[in-house]
Length: 104
Image (cartoon, rainbow, N blue to C red; front, top):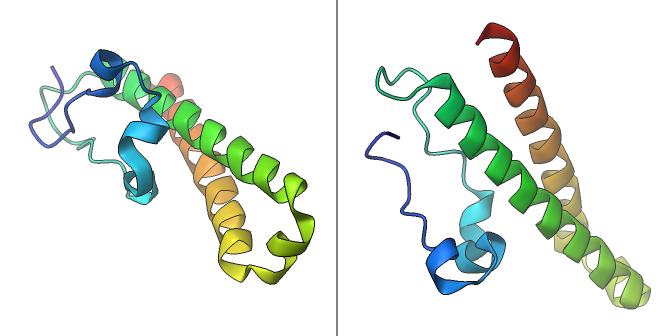
C-alpha cells in the first residue's frame, strides 16, 4: 500500500494516458514518501517507473511539437525551458530508480 499522500490512480479508469489526466501536475515532485515504513521498495520503484514513463511521453510530445513548428519553438523560451526541465527530471528519476533497485 502506498502512503496516503499519493494521488489516486484515475488514468486507468478514464482510459486517458496519465500524462493527459495529470496535465501540469507532472511537473510537481513525486508525492511518494520514501521514508514511509508501509511503502515497500517495490511499490516505490513501480510508482517512479510510471512517472518516468509519463515524463518520457510528455518529453516526446514536446519535441514533436517543436519539430512541427520550429519557428514558433525558436521564439518560445518557455518551451525550451520545458524540454530542459523534462530532460533533467527524466535523468533524476532514472537515477532514483537505479539506486532503489540496487539497495532493495
